[in-house]
Image (cartoon, rainbow, N blue to C red; front, side, top):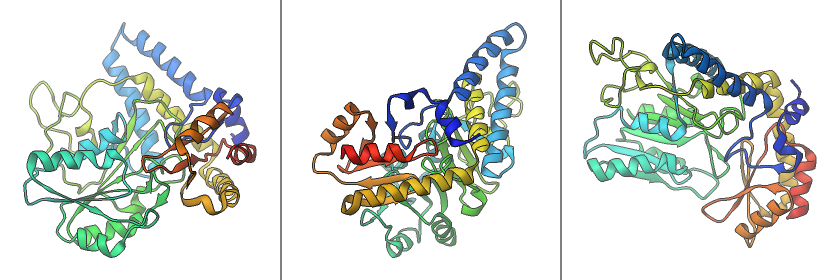
Length: 358
């Protein structure tokens, strides 16, 4: 599938230059149709075994996600979203007051709030590594993780900053800390092989760069990742749920109960659609679009991470609303900066519309 064909499948693009995939990606027709067919198939399955049907669809989606990340299916748990995945990780540790959790100033609330809550409830210490807004202080990071239990960081920050994940994971592991990576701004935007990162856990959603449905996410769990303290369980987590609470030894232990097979079908279709486009094509097209936008922004450009381009404007919230009235969708960030998200379905004309509006 060519990028132009994908664009034709996204009806929203008939009216808007949509540059906000980093918040939520508009689903193409292939995904919407898979969801519709998924609802019909599940309804029909009620005459026989609806729960078995859900399990079969989940297995297919898990396999597609695993292939996308270049891992075996048993290392993937299907979740609701990135935040759900990170909270599952938080449940893997028996937190005590002498534990240390490290995050960075670049993290989304999904990578901040769970640890603040653990600090409130269990007395653990949360250390936030400072940045200058575009780069992580590597020396401060190395100091922060020296006695840490867990590190939570983004592969690409929602502020449009790429982090050297492999190096940061290595530093954390040398200090004895586990690492969970928030890959919400990477999975679907670029080819991700989680083996390269070496992290213990990786969480991502289907509804951003994968262009899938809301309500489905993924959690990669390495073979030696800490899981012993897990308390969040259900019948899908257990090997023989009617007999004991003995959990699966792989990532399935984190899947608790029923989920929508229709949404799973949509997520699988999203993965397959982008694989048909080809991630080399995604990366090359996004790189060209990013360069064009950076050139056009000039001195207002602040940072770029993946397909996210951050820049400033004197009246950010007003600018977002005015651009929307002109058919251009971007977003403002909590710090007052603006952010455009460029995906493979975007065009040079979308960039020109944004620059003209600015």
